[in-house]
Length: 428
Image 1 (cartoon, rainbow, N blue to C red):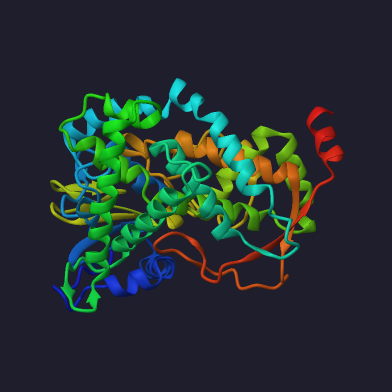
Image 2 (cartoon, rainbow, N blue to C red):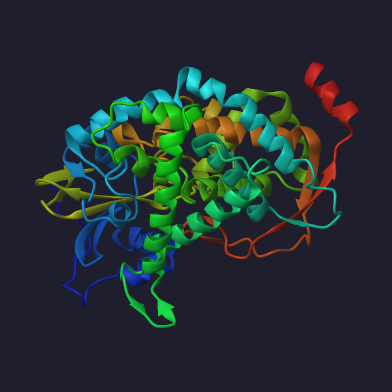
C-alpha cells in the first residue's frame, strides 16, 4: 500500500483549515492536480486528514469500511443537536436508524403527499404575479421552511403565523451557530454567534417538548411513541429535523435546477422533463451530481486502514468531498457538463456513486422524503412556468459553504404557461 500523497504539516502552523473553508473546491482541485491523485493528505482542524475525491475512495469510506471510519464524537453537530442518528456510532446509531426509518418510508411518507402538494402550490403559485424578477433561493428556502415545520412539528404557516415566524427565526439563529467558532462567550452588549445559537436551541427545545407532550397526531405523535434510547432522544431528533439545514438543502437544489433549465435554449429540456417523469429523475440526478448541497462529510479512522490503495493511520481525519467525487473522470465522462442522458447510458444504475446525502449505512434517513419534495416542486414549476435569468448576465459562480449556491443570489423572471398547452402535454 502507498503512503498518502501530500503533507500533514505540523500542529497549528501547518493547518490548512482557513484555506480550505475559504474555497473548498479550488483547494481540492489544486491538490488533485499537484499530487496527480484524487486522494491526498493535509492538516484540517489541526488533525492530519485524508481528503477523498474519488468514487472508489468514497465507496470504501462510507460503505465497505463504515465500521472503521467513524463519526467524530467532538463534532460541532453534537454540540448543536446532541446525540442523534447523525452524530452517534456503532450499535446506538443502528438502533436509532431502525427506530426512525418507519417515519420516512411507506405509509408515513405517503401520508405526507397531499400536504407537500398543497404547500408547493401555495408557495410557488405567485412567482410571476409581481412581474419582477424573483430571488429564487429565498423563495425556495421559504418553501422548505413551511414544509419542514408543517411536516415535522405540525406548525403550519397559514394556521399559526406568529409561532411559525418565531420558530423560523430561532432555527436561523441556531443554524448560524454551525458556522460560528464554537466559543460560548457572553459580555455586555455582545455575545458570540455560538452562544446565540445555544440560546436559540434552548428556546426551540421548549417548543419541541411542549409539542411532544401535547400533540398525538402526525410526525410528532409517531416520534413520541417510538422506542428511543432515552427521554431526550425524541426532542433532539425533532430539533435536527426542523433545523434550517433541510430548507437550505432543498433551496440549494431547487435553485440549481432552475438555473440549469433556464432560458429559451432549455425549453425542450423543460418540456421533456414535464412529460416524462423518468427524464425528470435523470435531470435531478444530474443537478445533484454537479451542485451537491453539502460539500461532504468527515470521519475519524478508528484503526489503521486503507482507502483507494493508500494507508490511513489510526486517528487520522478523513473528509470526502462530494463536488470532487461527483466529477471523478474515471466514472463520469465529461464530468463538468450537464448531461442528464448519462443516467440512462453509461451511468445507468449508478446513483449510489453520488454522495450528496451521504451513502451506505449512514446515508441521510430522509433522502426519500427529499426526493418526493424535489419532484413535486420541480413538476409544479415545469407545469406552470417558463423562466429565464433576469438580467440575462449574472455572476453565477458558486460558493460551497455552508450550503452550495451562487455567491450572488440569482434573480429569475417567471412567465405563466398557457394551461391549455400544459394540460394537453399531460394527457397527450
